[in-house]
Image (tube, rainbow, N blue to C red; front, side, top):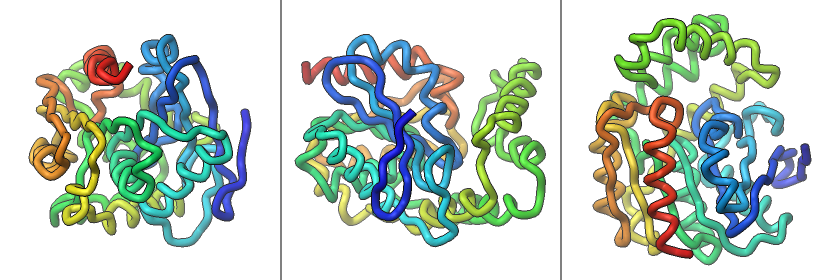
Length: 265
């Protein structure tokens, strides 16, 4: 798998499928593998570009401050190296924050935008939680860490199948490119410091804002703020989804994405 040098780091990426370019940006503590369940639905129609943000996976994990703007510049540099002028852009959670910055900094590169379970700015409860998660990574092992975080990510329905939770935790802790403590810390601070509330009205590409009704981490009110602030945005609330609806409700989320993207073919 290829790596490129961007902004003083190595960025790991992969491309699959053919068609118009579709760039996927993953969220906090997640590398490109977080999109794996969606990939079969997408690669038949699009050239799907996935990469590991700085601080995670097989990309560099510098022990220095990150920001969503800096990570947006990483993504833009990757597109330049690949010779891709314009993409459909999708971001989940922190990836949606990065996607907002990418759309603001490089509007000419973005044909359409999909923001999944994301936000313009965290409230005090959200920021306090993310700050604690950033600090906690240095004090406990990864298995206990995931056990503490998962209830914020997945719904009661997911937890009604205990073996699903255990299998996912085991997958995470055995993953060869598991998150590091300092990568988690610096990504957490990028999330907390992100604020596009006074700038999202400058995003002028067609935008789909999607969130799970049962998302307790980035609740519906965050997506409502995005949809109300972005001029060409539409809001879709997934009835049975939580923050992890890419895993729990893969087909529902993907079909909604494809329906939106079909408008531009």
